Length: 321
Ligand SMILES: [Mn+2]
Image 1: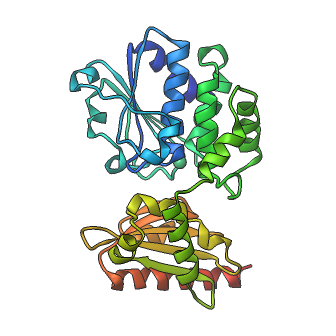
Image 2 (image 1 turned 30 degrees about the horizontal axis):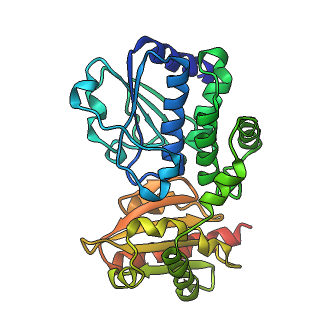
């Protein structure tokens, strides 16, 4: 379907409802918050009589993007609920998303779970923030861009593209980023904020770069045990900034950072610069983008299975390139 038709359907619903509640995924990243808060800012400034709320857990390190609202269950009566940047329902933060009158999904991950009364999924978009910005720019006076929305949407695009590093950053992405930069915020300040880490994360980064195992075929892997995390006074959320680092090492094609959880299981943060890895992620209770996925491993044996699968993918990829 022509995306403008879907955009118009989404706009018609936004106009029809007095209350709009916007959700996004658990453990939010800048794109989850940027698309969520950006859409809220667009609706609030265009339709000041509407009640617009953003919900979900807060992350202190991303507080510069904006805070969340605390709302009672009753707010969902006759409300439009929009979920951004979230592929499947178990990943939605705040489980009340089904309590509204109408549900819209807007996302850029592979469409594994087609929830919602309307679903708009564009896997060619770098980020959900890019989709929300495109919605605004495409709909003209129905949802005009503003400074506050532009700032967080730009942050979301920067976050999901690794500052325009990954293949997901297309000519369309840069065209939209360029339009956003014309609004009154500092793109450089956003990039600097997103490029700044606490000392403990800097120390953890050093540990990962010094201790990662790199195989002959270019598969990187490292386990961050509870013991190691404690040594750096770090928890799971502190591992997000270290995930891209192995990709900066020459010869590394794909990699996994395996973070031990309090349960003793491992959260697997998987990335690639070529081989398609999300099928492996799916086989281990996860999923995601072709080059950026997540999974769960119950023990070190399952981690080894994932690393072995990556070895095969890396060999296949090298043979075909
Ligand atoms: Mn995203």
